[in-house]
Length: 379
Image (cartoon, rainbow, N blue to C red):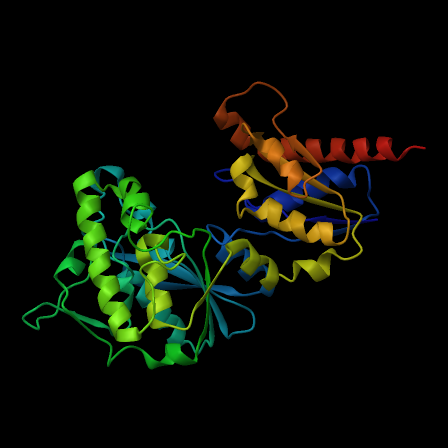
């Protein structure tokens, strides 16, 4: 019997690797001689770098970069086992978690640190770059990232402007003569799970700005600034970015990649599952177990469990999803390839207890899943 275990992490509790181990330990109490294939996965956001490093025997590279407010911090990117592919999560350098809630002001934050990570990776000799968008504290259109890679932003007097969200309103010229030429020869895959455009009611400022500290007045200012940046970019590059799907991701970093590089924007989970060669590893399996910390109707939109289930259904493999909890609407997952859903909390308990006991509870749940499967198989 072959069982594939391919979960995402249980946030604030277990890494995807720990989930795999807990599930396998529980199943082994019933099926000690089964073949187990563990594939820790991620959906293109948090955990993506670690999942790909683990799968390829890669390593983390630590770099000193500027955080969203210009302070020096330690950030990491992944150098995969082929030594030609780097994985960067933009949140490492410009993540919302780097700015205390009381100090969030997305008008003044910059994605400069992301560009520093990219430059360091290029210096390492990579020829392929995978970038996970999401969780940024910025709304600068990726201008900070571009500045770190050699692009200059000038005001009407020809003076250089330090890029941030609000300063794009004063940009009258974008100079790309010193833009890092190595990017033209680098395959760039951007993991992006939103289709928001750069500007407008569903754009980077209006849709994501408030969670980054933007007031209603800030949103209007930032949207104008992004439009200014977008118009100048379209004029220089002859590429449409303002209304392009995904250009509003990560405060407009998506637009910078679309406008100034040959990047492809792809679903984050599709990028990860392809890199991990999940389809090949799944062939011949009798059961697939996936899951994440919370399952609800949002799980059907680009999250790891449904991505895993979609592959399993190509081979008619039954799929079980495990979680710490479910929310209203999780039943929609039954329409997306998941055959059964189980939660691992065995009794009423506090959140802190549920998080700390997750490994034990998940192992016990997995044993019961195996026993239930055996009962269903009895003629």
